[in-house]
Amino acid sequence: MNSRQRLLYEVSMINFSELVEKRRSIRKFAQRPVARDDLRQIVEAARLAPSGSNRQPWRFAVLTEERDRESIAPAVVQPFVLEAPLIFVCCLDRAAYLKKTMELRMQELAQARVLSKEAAAALYRRSPPEDIEEVKLSPAAYIDLGIAVEHMILQAAALGLGSCWVRLLDPHLLHRILKLPSRIEVVALLPVGYPAENPPPRPRLSTDEIILHWGDKG
Image 1: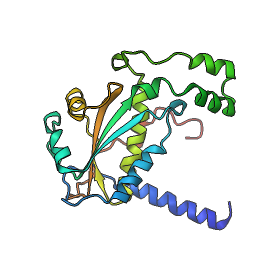
Image 2: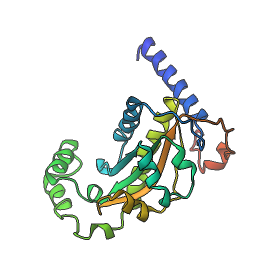
Image 3: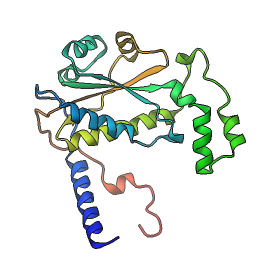
């Protein structure tokens, strides 16, 4: 790494550290629409997130029209969500998590030399069950979605936007209101907009309280 690369790296690390430190959960939004380019950057941040076996199980309904945001009111517990000019309905696609196209997965695993062609074929031979809405997903699927949403939260913050991860909702009612396919499971809401508040940082545990073991050189 040359001096210029080192400088760019150090600047990016400072900016990211400041971004993480200054990010807040926002519950009051200015009545100002989110630019389409900013919306796309937030979605792109989710698209690029990592996931187990590269399943990419996240799916999103994007609500920007007032009538669409108002339509989900019966399923929303916290009214501030509906005041945001942009709401992401964060979901999991059971079919995407359980099975990708066998040919694509075989190519990926063969190229990565993770599994042999025979092992990959055996692993992905079965099709998803017909009653896929009854399938219980692995906790790893929800971790994958959480990673993608955190990417979105940080990208929004980098654009000067506020957001708040929300799990207080009626997912089944929201599913019906939006008429989502049976393979889709609603997990969370992510309201996004320009902050109309500047809340102080919430209390955090100390570093020593969250580290169980530092290692020999901690």
